[in-house]
Image (cartoon, rainbow, N blue to C red):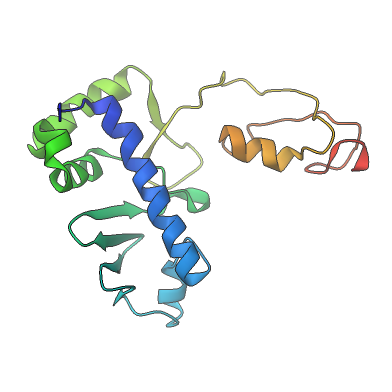
Length: 183
């Protein structure tokens, strides 16, 4: 398989973290199992099946799928799509057949700095997280729209993946996050 570039890595890694937290939610009823661990309802590390185990650490989790580990940190609002050069290096080492050049610890750092300089990703200003997130594919100015009947503002926010407070919706209903025309 041809080695992929940083852009591929930046899009693949958060997808793997999301699939991993979907598994955690299916198994434990929540994507963020840190709270369960901190309240002594879950051990720090445990085998989920014969082939899958997890280990919680600091603000993140490492899930081993018998041969590949996905290590991620929970970001603000329990986001798991955050990244940094270290996360890319760890992930590349797990799948070196796809990202061989990123198994050198300096390569992700150098290319990542260029990616940030191009304005393609940023840290969230309202967060203490050190993770970076892809910039929204929509303009950074507030978006105003009218909801279609039966579509809630919250559904639209989740679909376009904007940060909370970045979306301003206009509906016929004065209450925020409600359905159009009171539906």
